[in-house]
Length: 390
Ligand code: APR
Ligand code: PHB
Image (cartoon, rainbow, N blue to C red; front, side, top):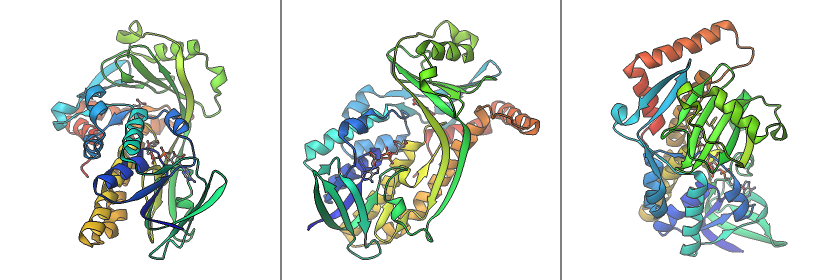
């Protein structure tokens, strides 16, 4: 039976970032991932990093490419009733965000882990956790047909929404909170220059749209769609036509069309599981919470969880103090709930809700009218968008 200080379940951005940070602190880890590296890198997710996440990538020693290729954004635009409104992050908060795709973040973290020699076991099947409430929990799994067991001090459950970690917490202890939205996002990635230098969030009578980017030559666009929509019904041409129709008049002729490299539909959900700790198991990232993508908080929340957990583990191993680990769930959840609120608010304010009562529509209009009339309200949006402090 093998033994290690920390077993990390999941090699998404949360697990890999935690692994690298613990590596810099000299704390030994094994990462278990059920998929292959190519599968993990094939998932396309948001691409906006708060300064906290940027700083963690630097502390993890993984920032070389990000610092070179990431694009600093000092603001974003919201389009409502055909009018563009700019939220100036720099002016309102004195800071900015960095546009750098999550796929690239993941790739940089994977490369750094390989270079460090620390073990990641990909295609680890049937991972199961036991003795979580004892000082030496056990992780069992199968790799290349061989059953293996690892004992450890702590388990970091970084295995996403569908992972095994959250499900290993006894049902009578776990409490979950959820909202499922009555629409999804249809996303398209293409090697075409973005329609604008900044992101544009569009509230349009025919549905929300978002113009985003991965680089100066790669665009990422989204359209609000029904939950019953099928990708096969969305030819590239149909997507481009629908997007162009929702763009501000000033941008319709600027849209550069091209073949899609990826096209997918994602449902929108808000979800939180409490507590984020059970015995020696600590949940981080999507394993504990999901936000709808409006505002791009998913990866950034995973990063703040990882920060609190890294510091707690450092205190434990370097200073013999367990206070940081005791405080983990409380600190992480306090920040999680604020980001949940922000993502829910952005989603509610910017989408068309099918069959929405007239009163709710009026509230949405009033919310937007107030936002654009008040520097205080725009500052509130900006400070949440660039990221609340850790
Ligand atoms: N055993 C081992 N690994 C597992 C298991 C399991 N039983 N279940 C899931 N995994 C792996 C998944 O294959 C995935 O690679 O855990 C990883 C979880 O990664 P993500 O889903 O990306 O979650 P996280 O790292 O928390 O990411 C947080 O990034 O992907 C976005 O939407 C996400 O934006 C959020 C942020
Ligand atoms: C993206 O680029 O994929 C993206 C950007 C901002 C969001 C959501 C997604 O709010």
